[in-house]
Length: 246
Image (cartoon, rainbow, N blue to C red; front, side):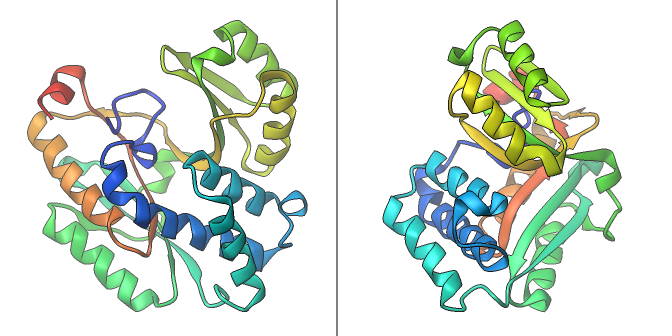
């Protein structure tokens, strides 16, 4: 459940996966195309593309789909996309960050503002909520990677800044510019990670009641269904009793 685990924030929700699979592949493909367009089409020479490909593989995207997305970048596709971050407040003042990739900023801005307004929130200025989050690299491993001490030692040796471990696994944090290097170093000790990506990590989490959780879910679902929206992050936590009712 989004916001339920202390480190599995709203970017990484597993529910509704079948329904959103096609849309998810489309968004992952867009990121691959743009990453390849901005740098080298070889993932080994392009850290951002390497992470995008890794994220796609983590979601079981077929190899041929990944290769087509990279080839599109060489055909000129993706050159008009721009990345725009929107910030605002959801129901009960929950901070929300929306990252988009669009070829029409007017359309995207209008849609995102409408989603907030219709779902009990309001869109703010850039910087209005991001100060409540830390921009970090995040590398996740399943529990099978090792116990907390083993993972902590490997993470520190790889240059990571912090590790959070619980029954669900391990989340390793590092500086944004060091994500690719730390991820590669960790693979030598712990094997391939489940996921490596850039995230907005809330500095504090706000527990929500059932009514607020339902409203937030509706807002986030609406945002995520938009083709221009790549990620949605919010600083709320759902207690177990509330999660059970959802």
